[in-house]
Length: 222
Image (cartoon, rainbow, N blue to C red):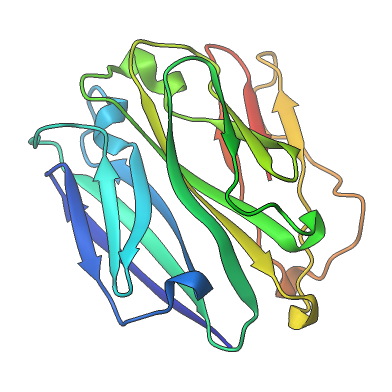
């Protein structure tokens, strides 16, 4: 059985901890998004957040700032837990990018890409300005079953922190993962339709995607 706990939290500090019902960390992952409520200049160190499970009942949402700010961050989180062994989290860690890319060796190799999904969230160092926003978002691709490559399209003086989770679904879970990568050129002013190469049942499928961008164009992994 899958149990989902979701919520919204607002904070103007460096980070905030959300206490929820207890869970088994090895059988639980978290997905989150964040925004700020200021319509003026948007600095990525204020809205870029990592989402982490720090113990068996707490979600930590953390910005890259080193001091509180008057700008409130609004974060939405979804904690997904299985109770019958439908999946397990094989890797959960954090890494930092100081250049344009980073290679990460996994503590446990990916057993089967067709049953594995990779989830990550990003924050960027204190003082990052609106012009550094492209350095916050990172794309990712596995270079092998035991290594991930994270890329950001605009190198900067600020460090990007990435928290990642690798979720492996069981053979008998009935779950199949379809993943891919696409790029939108700077000349495109709207969306793109992607063929995933196989048919799915929309009523029993869900989509998870990430994106990165430079000064022009957009690239995304799904």
